[in-house]
Image (cartoon, rainbow, N blue to C red; front, side, top):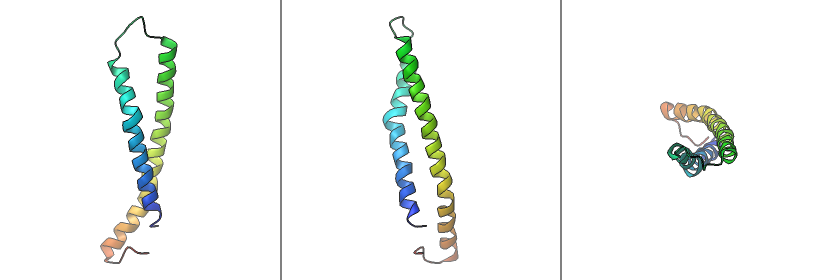
Length: 88
């Protein structure tokens, strides 16, 4: 059980870094884009589709990590509440 916690923590941090590095700046750029006839619609649609599809993957990864953290968290909580050492 103890081996899962660091791995899940690293996965969680990786998803958060990916969010900050790619998703947040891209959505902000989309929001700040003014309507213009010079924007290339096919390229914009392609970039939006890529962002959307990667976002589905990101959300699934975050949900998987969150669900996987339930069991180790309950295990640690039981150990701490019972006064036992968390070395098992």
